[in-house]
Image (cartoon, rainbow, N blue to C red; front, side, top):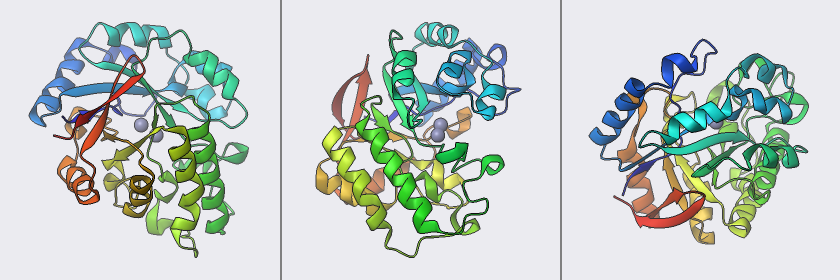
Length: 275
Ligand SMILES: [Zn+2]
Ligand SMILES: [Zn+2]
């Protein structure tokens, strides 16, 4: 089986409103694209910060600007389609209880947990809130990022850990650590193995300056050694990105000896043979 769970029904700009993108026609375009790519399980996971209710979790100025939509209307819309219902929820250190309340009582099939935001509201993937502004010590940034990723894994809030080494997104456009990246990966992988959270293999990094999948092969190897389970995603923001470069993801998983992928329903996970 092939799955694509980390999918957005719309681009990231605030002008991409629900009335334009949460429509049956748009869903049909995504389902068509999935069929072409032989993806049997397609789920969507909108950014939590685009919903008003997320302001109970964080009042980050970026969230204040983005939080326009209603999360329950989103859930209701997706439930009436053949799509699996997910959400991409940010891990915000110190806000675990508030994240839990936001997710509780809403019947997601799975929750994708992401570390985009680091200390003082700085982000690893947003130039406007750049974690690298005035920061040249890549080992410090990577160390902190993977510590937050470990906390996200251990929080128990999420089913899938999204784009696990997103800190590398800018590739050569930002500083790169001197240490062997495995030094930074290890605490995060330990948390992944202890918690049992699924690791997302995301092809989205191939569309970014770094030009490689998330996570790196080295990170995947440590996960495989620890017996972690994998979930497969494109992080599509448009129908034509559904299943993006899946041949490469499948090849990597086969090389690593991973023969199964995670399938989710109402936050219960099972493994299916990789298609
Ligand atoms: Zn993300
Ligand atoms: Zn995403």
